[in-house]
Image (cartoon, rainbow, N blue to C red; front, side, top):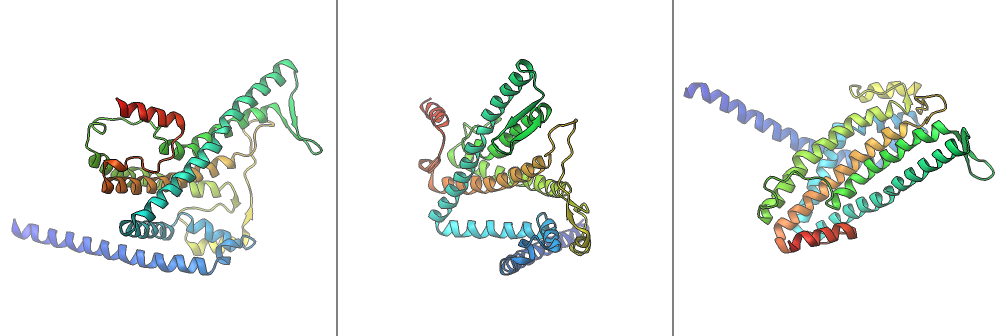
Length: 311
């Protein structure tokens, strides 16, 4: 039995050592890749060059970008352990960004309701088939275009308000033991949840949504399995081909915006997952007195939180 377990243990230790070495190498290369990208912005920001667009397409969902962001996360966390005030500043900045975007995007819900009422009046009462908006050069589309566009407002609310809703504590939580747990236990659960659930989910959505978005923006269509050299070679024939296909005659023809929103949603969830982890660690470190410290919640959420605390 000892002879059988010996090689298995050695293989496990060797695999673990190889994995740690690969992680260290990737972190070291991430520092180099970030420095190179910042020192040569024209290689990926000059979109008049098709090869620059190809580099953005490739690196936007690449292992290299993942380790650059992972290294930044580790660096900010390390500095935050040394300087908690710096980490509180990062948390407040990320939560403020989510709150600002969410509060602005939430108005899309009101616009959606008003536009639906206008469509009903124009179509049922005035018996018109088009809606014209504007002075001079009007914005004129068929009723079916405006009707299908309502889905875009719904997508804006869903994609851009999720992080804001998380900051406000308004997401549905299935609570089996969380409310009765001690403060530090709850903070540990939040940290593990952000690392094991929020971040992986958002990264997967980003990876799949990134190439899905670009396949509706440029041609030849890029693929996640293609190497950088292959994409650079295809850049000779690259041209913009923004999707303008509608699902009905005279219908809404800007469905590429839904793909863009999907990528933006994933990016905002990744940022908010970082904020959740850092806030949870800071509140775990500073104790129960720091709960919801510097948290900017809307009045209804604050009132609900106050009533829960009173109970």
